[in-house]
Amino acid sequence: TRNRYQSYTNSRKDYKRKDEPSINVVDTTKDDDEYAYQKHFYSITISAKCMHSIHVKPPRDEAYTTLNVKPPFLQRHGYTLRLKIDTGASGNTLPLRTFRQMYGTSTQSMEHLKPASNVKLTSYTGDVIPCFGIINMPCQYKESRWTSAKFYVVDVPGPAVVGLPTCELLSLVTVNVDAMTEKKTMRRRGSKQKRKYPDQFDKIGSFTGTAKLILKEGANPFIDPPRKCSIHIKDKLHNELNKFVNQGVLRKVEEHTDWCSSLAFSTKKDGSLRICLDPQKLNASLKRCPHKIPTLEELNPKFANAKVFSKLDAKAGYWSIHLDEESQILTTFRSPFGRYCWRRLPFGLSVSQDLFQAKMDQILEGLHGVISIADDVAVCGVDKEDHDRNLISLMERATETGLVFNSEKCIIKQQSISFFGNLYTDKGIRPDPAKVQAIQKVPTPQSKDDLHRFMGMMNYLSPYIPKFADKAHSLRGLLRNDSQWMWDTDYQKCFEDLKSTVTVDACLKYYNPTTTLTLEVDASQRGIGVALVQDNRPIAFGSKTLTECQSRYSNIEREMLAIVLQRMLIKAQGYNYSIVYCPGNQKDPKLSALKEIIHQGWPDRIQDLPKDLRSYWPFRDELAIEAGVVFKGRQ
Image 1 (cartoon, rainbow, N blue to C red):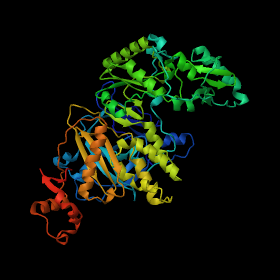
Image 2 (cartoon, helix red, strand yellow):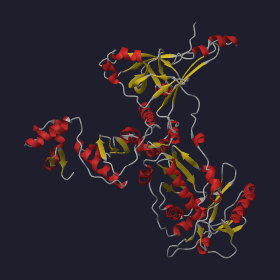
Image 3 (tube, rainbow, N blue to C red):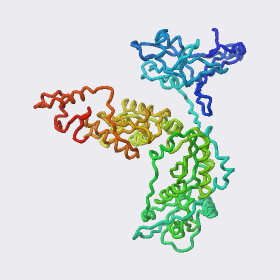
């Protein structure tokens, strides 16, 4: 058998030894900027001579497969394509000669390719590989479902290549190792900031002023009975309490107190103890002054146009807030070593989150490019200079106010950051890869509780899933109280399809208040959905499963319900817009017939109506047409 070295270029062949492996790389880059995107295509061939030299039987060094493909714009769809499986490649290539066999050799055939002006393919030696364009073709392996795949059309002598992503989608290969994440490789600690601002890292912060806990009128004091403590952790608990006393977080209480709560603690992964208060009775008696916590929908537009990101974590954030003397006494708790009270705001109080968020908003007020929820603080900028100015402003404000950060959790000057379950990038908002990976690893549910947990995870990522209510309808039906648990192949298919809809490639655009918004709504017999679009890119998706009563609505009522409901949902997110009706491209035969009946007048008997229009008969007098739109009453 004659072995040849596979390569996208014939250059430098004379410089390779015949007994060494041949490794060839093609890079796809946009521009030679600091954050250039790269795609690698690997083609590896091991010489048979090299294999025999170590007395090992040469394994098969190439693998091919045959796929059914549907080239777009062609009347014939019965094409089969033989491709080389290359799990080292992150993309697919289609030789130019194969493309011309499909579409012909005329210059008009090249019009079917999408331009690849921002893509440059280069070999390992740096030679440019001609790329004539990109074509998306539906592919099918045996009897599996059709999957759209992107092919780079290149002028190379080798066969068509199918890369790892498409191989996995078509189940050609199975990867039995965990995917590597970029989190550890991309993280850069705030070492530079720590050297410049040593007092603002890795210690307990100290905000100016004190917080006061206010009891409700008529609150009755309560003293919890003591809780037992295991003998083997008593010494560790005592040492931890003494450490907190030395740090100024706790103090011993000798005087009488009307309130005394229980002590709660748990063991951390590193073996140390996490100590907090269990103030169940105290929480019921505290007056709460609610402070609005900003939602992600309110904060997302602040990331618009940002190219550089950082994320900082407030060190023991609650403990940065001092309590006044009276409030300290209210937090008294009993331990095996006597009574203690908290000098700093403890975890577990019903008012702790409100007090801390209010203080953080006060500290960060007026800072450009700084966004905060709870103890996570994000910094962004349109370029490195803008980002650095914003970060310096934050550190100066932290110095003035006593805000302290945890250097181990700082991520400084990155192309993207994970922030409250989302990945914020210069292109838009994506789902956190860690959450997507967790979804893909969810096993088949064995009970309603398992399915509830899975649907809860999917609901969190539903803003990235168009028509989520329709796709999850079957599984939601299984969760009804009157439904008996019976998992079959249909539910399994719905479960797998729903998992496959969540990908790290999903991307939502940042909202721009100066650009026109389009609200696209649709309805089916199962649910209603919405897409908020700006510049032909989605900003948000929303959907709702119809109730049993709503599912019996006529088509026009369901579509109007979608408009009314989704307008309320979008309005709740703080978007300000006016409605402009944009008619669809395709005509609905049923709706066209209804408009014709309204123009000509309704017949005297329902029997004279077409069967598909008889559902409109009960409210025929409420229907009217204005500017080509059918209205029912005021809807």
